[in-house]
Amino acid sequence: MRVGSLTVKPPPFDYSAPDTLEEALFLLGEAGDEARPLAGGQSLVPLLSLRLARPSLLVDLAGITTLRTLGAADGHLALGAMVRERQAERDVRVRRLAPVLADALPLIGHPAIRSRGTIGGSLSHADPAAELPAVALVLEAELVAESRARGRRSIAAANFFTGFFTTELAPDELLTSLRVPSPAPGTGWAVDEVARRHGDFAIVGAAAMVRLDTSTGRIGEARVALAGVGDTPVRLRETERMLDGAEPADGAFADAAEDAAARLSPPADVHGSAAYRRHIAGVLVRRTLKLAAQRAREAA
Amino acid sequence: MTSFDVELTVNGLARRATVEARRTLADFLREDLGLTGTHLGCEHGVCGACTVLVDGEPARSCLMLAVQARGADVRTVEGLAAGGKMNRLQEAMWDSHGFQCGFCTPGFLMQITALLADIPEPSEAEIREALSGNICRCTGYESIVNGVLRAAGATGFLE
Ligand SMILES: Cc1cc2nc3c(=O)[nH]c(=O)nc-3n(C[C@H](O)[C@H](O)[C@H](O)COP(=O)(O)OP(=O)(O)OC[C@H]3O[C@@H](n4cnc5c(N)ncnc54)[C@H](O)[C@@H]3O)c2cc1C
Ligand code: FES
Ligand code: FES
Image 1 (cartoon, each protein chain N blue to C red):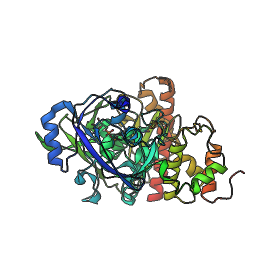
Image 2 (cartoon, rainbow over the protein chains, first blue to last red; image 1 turned 90 degrees about the vertical axis):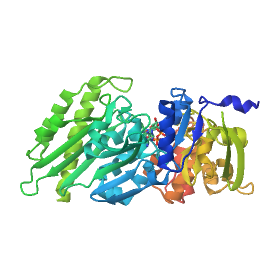
Image 3 (cartoon, chains in turn yellow, purple; image 1 turned 60 degrees about the horizontal axis):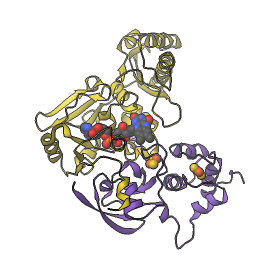
């Protein structure tokens, strides 16, 4: 035995790299929860190296070309689960049709993380501090999933994130694409976060949308979602309702921020107390709503 | 456990070895191919010391399995100098005292190579952003940023 072999970190596992979705679903169906899909590996490989995950089989999705498509059709932008974060961030269609996604992607980790990490991996991993789950909520995106046993189904982002690092996906099911509806005219979007250093996971992150009523100039619809304030990303529907029909002015956004902060019971850890997170959440709600409204005005 | 034949190109040369699926690309380069220029710091994606180029894009070799790199074109720090002569980036880093202990250097050089391929004349802000995922415990980063500016032919760097 070579000395080098002693340096392995992950526990042993088997590996398969199917070319087709059917084959991948078959492998996952046979193996049950002993198998794990491998996308960019930017979250899964650290879990393996730290031996926090011990799958018997990794099903590498990188060879499945149908999961790598990115395109706009029938009023939606569709991103295959295996589209790399870096690829999406550079794509002009993403910039045009989902600007909040284009703005959120560069906030994820570092360039070398995003050149491997995938859209589907980030959503499936469901880190409560991650950017993309909160952005999916604010976009009212659909997540398309497929398994051999139950076929294909579409899950609204609002129903996808069910708990701490937990999603609606069954162990034998794959997320295949993210579908983002095209924005209505007169909408503006914004995303912002507070992190200890550039590229770190957010302590708190926020994404917002404001649509202005083209005839009155008042708020027709507002949406806001937060990362880092609970077990899952959180959509603030009550706060949004306060803004219905309101004048898009600082006062309304400050009231919304206060309301949002009061509703949260965020976690406390070494990066910040619950009170600090609540405060930051309020500040980010106000900032993102204000910027989204400004952009909606510019878009009109 | 099943073993896998991993064939790939490293610094322009076809290489192959038979490894277990759990072999990381970093350990594959260092242990199986003897290319110890790629350094390992944290081994979970945070420090950037192990950064290499995979098909032209920067990647953490500690967060890739060797089997995932089958057929890929990998570039490591050993591929920068040609015929024993340092390339322009290496010269510029040398001239700017861009490293001290040198542990972080291979990762920085590969990340900077990717940056300069993308943006040939980056601003200081773009450099800092691109290097945000690489940790150096010695230099305080100023001399590294200066080295990148010098390599890019900028005039604003500190002598
Ligand atoms: C240093 C560092 C900093 C980071 N910073 C951030 C950050 O600031 N914000 C952030 O959001 N993320 C961050 N990440 C995580 C990064 O975004 C990951 O790329 C992402 O969370 C997982 O994507 P992946 O493609 O690498 O998935 P993998 O690691 O391959 O998989 C993650 C999980 O999802 C499952 N999975 C993957 N694809 C599918 C699918 N199609 N269907 C079903 N299940 C699937 C896997 O089985 C696994 O359980 C960081 C990572 C590192 C190492
Ligand atoms: S050793 Fe790979 S990022 Fe630290
Ligand atoms: S030179 Fe020592 S860590 Fe960077």
